[in-house]
Length: 96
Image (cartoon, rainbow, N blue to C red; front, side, top):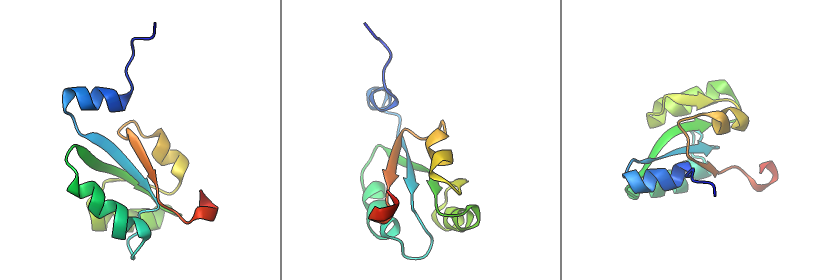
């Protein structure tokens, strides 16, 4: 029997916030900025810890705007971040 827990199960049990990373959280009116970010901030128990956009430069601008220090120019880098327990993909459908 596998006794290891997923990061989400561990966070829920310990009441630690679930670390969220958003792919596609731009600084200039992105879908994620208008919809996902307000919803995420309205629900207790979740913490925005990382974001990625189509380039490192735009990710850094978005991180500065949204108060996120972990910024990435690729989705793969965000997914590999140890601080991220849950990934939100908020890019246009063809880019999923």
